[in-house]
Amino acid sequence: MELGFEFEQYAYARGARHIAGVDEVGRGPLAGPVTAAAVVLTQGAIPEGLNDSKKLSAARREMLAREIMARADWAIAHVWVEEIDRLNILRASHVAMCRALGALRAPADFALVDGNLIPADLPCAGEAIIKGDGRCPSIAAASIIAKVARDKIMVDLAQQFPAYGWDRNAGYPTAAHLKALSSYGVTPYHRRSFRPAHNILCRDISASD
Image 1 (tube, helix red, strand yellow):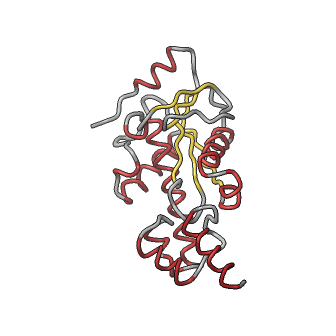
Image 2: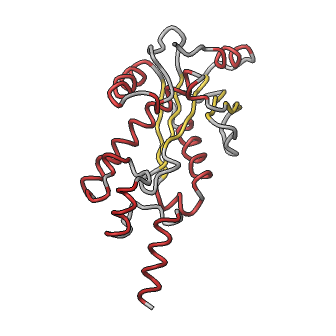
């Protein structure tokens, strides 16, 4: 079933003209960046089959990502582990969203944001939409290109650190990832503020005392 365009139409009715869907991926992983995307769709040029990226196969996401990038104004932003550890993951995800919005070719005048919070530094007016990636096509499009971009980064990082299985788990805390973390230790791409890496680093410090 195709997602309706009601959220975008409501924003148009309130005077907005350049409406961006915004979403992030990668809040839960133990490693890698948090990645956000902003997408401005044009009615009449919306790819078919947009949905929450988690409900799509990898092949379908890749195909839709290519279509979105060919038809829409879009931008992607990453916040890496040092900034995540300094800010906390919620704040880092909001920073990534704002950076993605700021990187659009034409500034958005309204943002449809996945979730229940509007980032404090959002550069335009906006509306938070709970589970928006499965309800709003602009947000669904953002979720798709953000996930495809982040997954590619994790596949690349897996070539440097193959033991952790990032090409399969994208840095999420699977049993295999946690076992590798315990066996081989913390890499430069692990989030030190997250409990699994933090506990290992504390253990190593205690063992060296």
